[in-house]
Image (cartoon, rainbow, N blue to C red):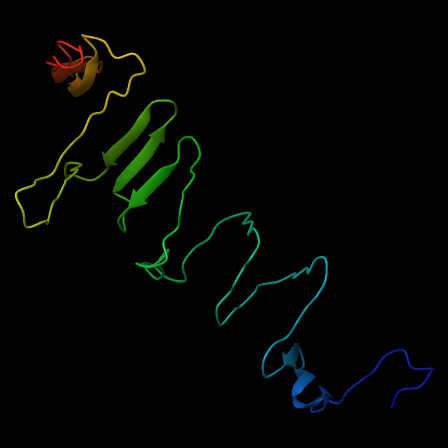
Length: 193
């Protein structure tokens, strides 16, 4: 019963407020739980919807705007979720300076961004960090490691790529022990060497 003197509407624990039919309702399903039910859709329209609490979503979330995450995104279990599919790939990935991509349950292999320098492949375990270029194509082509010198003013003597074999000396200083270097001997068009 609602009258002008009432401060609130109190429903018994087994009662519902229904709309149209019994499939659309608001219900205090437990002493600490409020249930909203509809057969097709519950539409919330507002400038902002503020949820203070944990969100347990059983279904598919379709976010048409920007999703801002303040802390992190984690799967529900170890190796328990994937990112994208074979037919629904993400486009670009932007990582900050010093970002680390970790591989393996023990995070023993990492790919680290070094500011203004490049990428570092590292292995923290007892084995060697191995970068394998694999080609499973059945023809004669094999794997390729390409060094591209894309200069706006190419000239003879340009260094096109270098592979350095570096280690530490007895004092712990970095030392290049060997290297493979490729350069252009003649950059003249038609006479390249």
